[in-house]
Length: 448
Image (tube, rainbow, N blue to C red):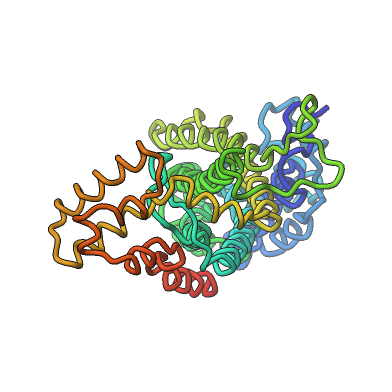
């Protein structure tokens, strides 16, 4: 019976959910047992014939979660039950050498690394696709002037495409961060009870290196009984950082879809219902879902940081919660990436409303450019600031267009002609370096 939405498949793709399926986790751990035995046999740590028999039986699907559950009912230890289940498949002369020199967390932590690696193999390509989709939108709307807002107020003119370029660049940085993180967090640890390699002696590092290569992981340089939890905290933090950027994008889309602004909208499919009570509603539900899941995602970070400080070579205060935090973080971010890809790919841009909103303040949004022009004419910055501010406040009170009010002001008109002001109040002329910035971001994204 499914209890959590993740269990029911409501959130997360089938491919991501499969990585954290209990049977897949068992398959990972059985594979680790086989890889260790094979490496130990090659190096003469265990008999080669025993190693061959163990590796032959340690294949995906040979041990089921059902059998482990049966054995765990007696042993109350999941790893010991896995080892016992593998021993049942092996001949007597191979059984003593199963799990030789290992401890439970050699399997647990190394299989977790395999899960995180495979999750990143899903997330990173999606992030790249999102960056590409965003930069496409940036290029498409690079010459479209729009309202730039600070503190929720109209501030200055912005290229509408620059919004998307900002997001594309941040996603590109996330991709680079995640790629760099792989070598640190996707590690193999087979160094036994307290990280010394104990029973394997001076060949312990050679075993670990061989196993890491077979599993497509990186051998950890040093560990206690466990992989240092700073690695897991980095994984959860980095994924959450990406999720928070998705939240930032979603929040802007939600704001721009507000009735009062109405510059963008999520796609509304034929037959879709926005509200059970209000027939006219078209709600930004995908963006809202992203923002909702982001709150849950950020909650995992604190837990991951709490797990860093453990007693001596380890205790168990991290173990239970990590069964939640790592799968939850990975699955939720996967869902958020999927949702954002759909939103950006199908987003509706209301160009007419974007242009109309520029003049909502009757020219006040051009005040920065008027002041700049006055400074270029030789007026001091503060004098120019006060002159424009005074005219603007009076124009607002009188409900007249700022350009008309400026033409009537003697201090302004003797420095700026009607043609000067008409050019200043042309939004297409006030995009600054937007086109160059978008081109630079485009090159960055193309290089991912």
